[in-house]
Length: 56
Image 1 (spheres, rainbow, N blue to C red):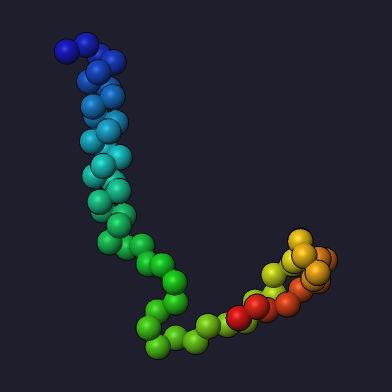
Image 2: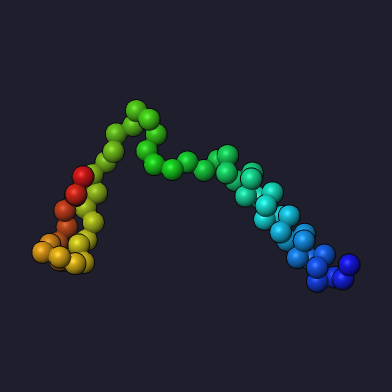
């Protein structure tokens, strides 16, 4: 096995293990029971272009 393929294999293993470990701590969205706070995005297209309004 040459050095380049060994380096590639170790990098792939490191990324795979890191991804598996990080997946446990990632959470998406609002937790159950928590309130969603309003937000005011800047509209860049359409009839509301340039304005801010919460669409929720």
